[in-house]
Amino acid sequence: MKPIQTQACCPEASAAPAQTETMMKYVLAGIPLLAAWWLVYSNLEAFSGWFAYDLLKLSHESHFGGAVAFFVYDTPKVLLLLTLVVFGVGLIRSFFTPDRTRKLLAGRRESAGNVLAALLGIVTPFCTCSAVPLFIGFVTAGVPLGVTFSFLISAPMVNEIAVVLLYGLFGWRVAAIYLGTGLLIAMLAGWVIGKFRLEHHLEDWVLEIKAGENAYTEANMTPPQRIRYGLDAVRDIVGRVWLYVVLGIAVGAAIHGYVPEGFMASIMGREAWWAIPVSVLIGIPMYSNAAGIIPIVHALLEKGAALGTVLAFMMSVIALSLPEAVILRKVLKPTLIAVFFGVVGFGIILVGYIFNLVI
Image (cartoon, rainbow, N blue to C red; front, top):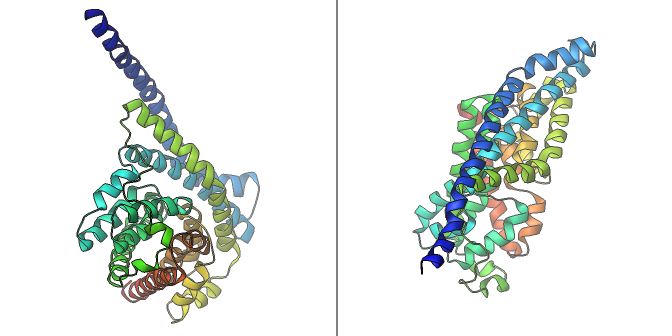
């Protein structure tokens, strides 16, 4: 028996030193990388001014000079924040699988489930490409429909990227406003949709799926594996969204440099009562994530747009989009999609008016 026990223990005994060695390599590499990250991030403003006005010899008063400085400053700033945040949340997500999320939500009281689902949406992976499997998983696991919609609203709209980038660009006050109102919309909209009892507007094939079927598995990862998971998240997510970030900042730079303040104030200012619903309608056909739209929001605010109007525009772009409706059509009948857009859209418009009145 002793040889058998020795053979069984050897892999575990040899794995521990290997994991420790790998972990030390990550730590030793991570410290200088974090130092380099901070050094670059803290000098971006000075670099952008030098690049636009000293190297390229552009005028401080020119529209093009302002647009170039804006673009050179915001592009690396957003990408640096994005990389750091995605890595950190990747570590969290290595503990927080979709299967665990479904288990936490199933069987809860609906009101408590709306709150929990909205909070879970902040740290749980979600995008339009994963809407169908996650939605099916929630419904077939017995999660109430309204609770599922709270998650569906919160996950793309109130995510770590949006909050951190808003903090980086506008400060904690605007970031906190966005976080609080986004969660409130997700909770209340999910609760309202749940009260409508619209389960019969799910596609029939969704209801026929057995609740016991589960495509997700829990993962018991070692610390080095979790770090690799975070690095993989950076390669995957940043690799997919960086172009949207650059394009969004380019649009923001154009607005920053060329669009007159009076024009933006007349379209998205406090005085125009119709500005908020029009901004929401404009935002729905657009398709972007938080990283891509926030630079545009930054430029709009600098040009005189009202905060409530701009936040409503941003929320509609992120939480309501035509591509999302096309994907969800595989799971939801048109009536339920219309209710979803109507309830969330009404909540976004209401939040916009409230903040324009209060702030």
